[in-house]
Image 1 (cartoon, rainbow, N blue to C red):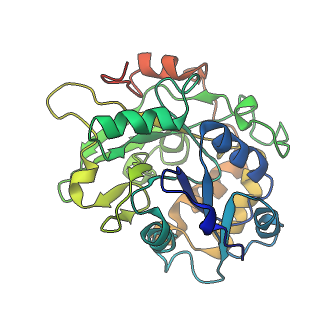
Image 2 (cartoon, rainbow, N blue to C red):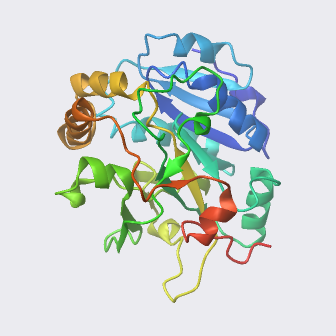
Image 3 (cartoon, rainbow, N blue to C red):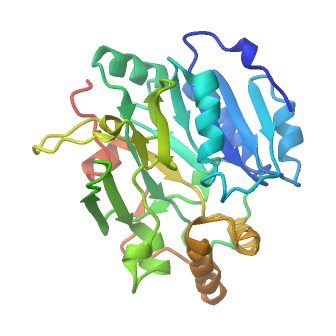
Length: 307
């Protein structure tokens, strides 16, 4: 719909995303990553009808594709983005994020993503992990209206500091992380059904690579070795996940009706059922977000040996 990929320079940092009906989130999302140093966005719009596509087509640093095809049959958008990375991402650092995910990393308050990728290049590291950290407001999520262009962390500034489980996937070698408020609130009796929180969103892409399941795991399998098995710490980041705003209830109902999500949309069925009773995730153990250093102290991310 708008192909500006001829603008991409060999050293550019690229962001990839797939979305549907996220117009209200796009102004802040794009500005956040522009300010962090992303040079070009490559986005697949899955048949939005809220103006998302038209808005993206107007942005000078965005190339956007449109499809009415099934999100589920594209492996939940993975096939679409794998192709775009194959075509345009080769030899670039590529960040794959959703419009409600905000990448933070050590020193992100003073250093752009370029500083991180320069250090990763110098250290011969090709992939960088970032656990998904679900953010939520205090009180019912329907209570504080979100406005286009607003930092969602102005509203959703609380998170779970603990209650995370971690296992190693024997087939792919990646860590499998679950927990947080989605496990605590929506899957309290079946935590094994809670969504995976492990992600590897930042990769020095090669056209021989591909994501095998969302950004949870990659091929070749060596790209999943983003942790130290011998007791040390490797540098890692977080994706602040601002899913739970006042827009979420309508979004959950829409996605439940579309039935385009993993495992017969079991996640969205749990959302709809629980939110009908009490749309609140905050509890007495919730922590209020301050900065990345707080999250490092809590053991949710690490600067490793990056100084």
